[in-house]
Image (cartoon, rainbow, N blue to C red; front, side, top):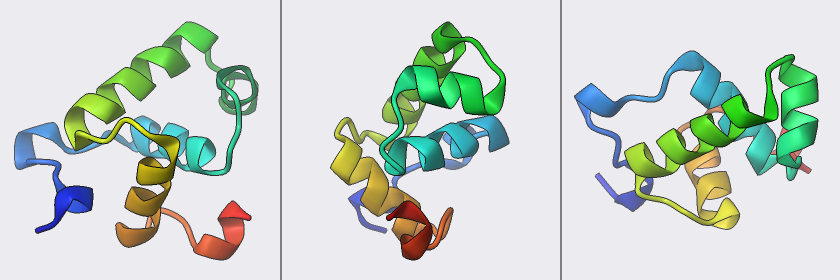
Length: 79
């Protein structure tokens, strides 16, 4: 298991965290993600903190690689 597949069984990403993560990988801002998913910006920020904690990845580039490696989105959908 490499650093981009780090989540443990107890720290797997929720479905909503995965949705937020894919939007982050698309390059959307917190506000854009909140609007797209019909949640508050504060909820987006909380999900992003949880995602970083669970994956150990803090950069958008690293999270994008995580999305691709874990097949959460196709690379062509991120462009």
